[in-house]
Amino acid sequence: MGTEKTAPQLVHSLYLLWGHHPRPGRSGISVTQIVQAGVDLADAQGLEATSMRKIGEQLGVSPMALYTHVPSKEDLVALMVDSVYGELYSDKANATNTRTWRDGLQQVAMCNWGLLIRHPWLLDVYDLRSLLGPNASRKYETELKVLDGIGLSDLDMEASLTTLLNVVQGAARDQRSDFESENRSGLTDTEWWAIVAPALEHLMSENDYPVSDRVGSTLGELFDAARDSQRSFHTGLELVLAGIEALIRPPDGSPASPPSAS
Amino acid sequence: MGTEKTAPQLVHSLYLLWGHHPRPGRSGISVTQIVQAGVDLADAQGLEATSMRKIGEQLGVSPMALYTHVPSKEDLVALMVDSVYGELYSDKANATNTRTWRDGLQQVAMCNWGLLIRHPWLLDVYDLRSLLGPNASRKYETELKVLDGIGLSDLDMEASLTTLLNVVQGAARDQRSDFESENRSGLTDTEWWAIVAPALEHLMSENDYPVSDRVGSTLGELFDAARDSQRSFHTGLELVLAGIEALIRPPDGSPASPPSAS
DNA sequence: GCCTTGCAGTGTACGCCGTACATTACGGCG
DNA sequence: CGCCGTAATGTACGGCGTACACTGCAAGGC
Image 1 (cartoon, rainbow over the protein chains, first blue to last red):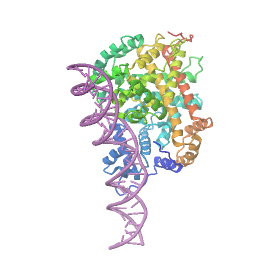
Image 2 (cartoon, protein in one colour; image 1 turned 135 degrees about the vertical axis):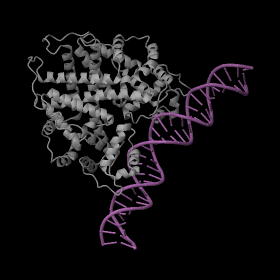
Image 3 (tube, protein in one colour; image 1 turned 180 degrees about the horizontal axis):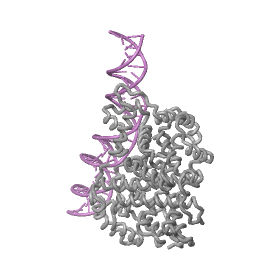
């Protein structure tokens, strides 16, 4: 969309994000209600099914009425994102008060994983990264704090956090992909494979792929899409944690005990 | 969207993917040409701008003519993906003939990174993972082979590869996000920040976020969106590689020299 | 050489989308 | 009671994927 925002519009969007909402008009709908309806719809049907028309309908209001409260769908989505970010780290015990940075990062990963599973449409938001709402800021601070003072440079802290979140996001994406392709086709993995496998075997008969065949078989024996994604999430998390540990300690490092947090 | 494929349709799609194309009709257009036009369009304008209408226009043919050759846009996208996968590891020297698994994985990461930078629309494809075309299969085999025989279980091989690719994908996503938000607003990062910063400072005046402020400053001093994404890509890659190394060697491991590949 | 017939290609139409713009109608104030 | 600002609405535009009825061309039978 060629929606080039002017400078005042940018500032307006920011203020909106930080809670400067217009007063509810005579229909009684508020920005908060619109955002809530959007989140509900997106949770239930996905972001692509979350249209201004449907949100309006759900609130008993014409689609165009929403534009009195929210300048564009893009801004609405930003509000939705920051809204669900509010779910994270709500009990103050989480992530901050852990004993080691490892535990802290695992908390961070688990919290983000849970959020992405509860709200898979987050994966469809284009620039999650540059969202500057209040809850996003709090999230960023909370997560960075876990990595602070453990021996990483500022740049490495940022890159490590980004990488961790990318791993979580990727795993969540895989899981959703598995889950949705089951629901969309109405076939279980097994049924789907039963249809596809013979054709594929025929097509691939000329080439052979020894390693992927073997790995495919191994996976197939234990196959369960959901569990598979979760396992690759946990493995990925472990890889990143071990990587960070190696980054902290010089590679010829002494076999010392793990350092404590903050 | 509610496109539930029947079993024969599934098989047909697979055959199409593996090169069983219908003969070109009297307009002369072939599946290959359609796919090529789709890739060109997506490279230039993104996947959301890649519509059947525009592809038809580019080929001098009515939009509906495409459906004689390709059953749906979803299938077309699958063909496009497998087509660009053909670019990977084309010179046989790549990835396979490296001396160590570390070098091999770096090759894999770099190749995928390059592919995603050349064809950022790959990031918008829902189900990249379960694509079973010929080039995707070759890609999977090539990449798995790098991890084979270095002391990982089949499950850990798969999870490690998935994680590596997720890191690459995440970094590419971040880079595109930076790049596109610049182009879409017509503002450089600096200009954008100059508009946003004062408002944000005002809004955040009550709360304070010591760690993210400091890290933000550090990043700001060296700020360049593209370079930043690349740096976080390289750091992420290092983290995963170190993680895999730790996975191979038991955590109490002896300080032996790194094992050689395959 | 003509006619038939099957299918490649087309045009139209439907139901979606975000939202610009002109219009209506309502609540609060004088 | 009447005015007026503005919240809410209706209509419309240009886009999307694609179902479906149609046309017109090229190849095969006589």
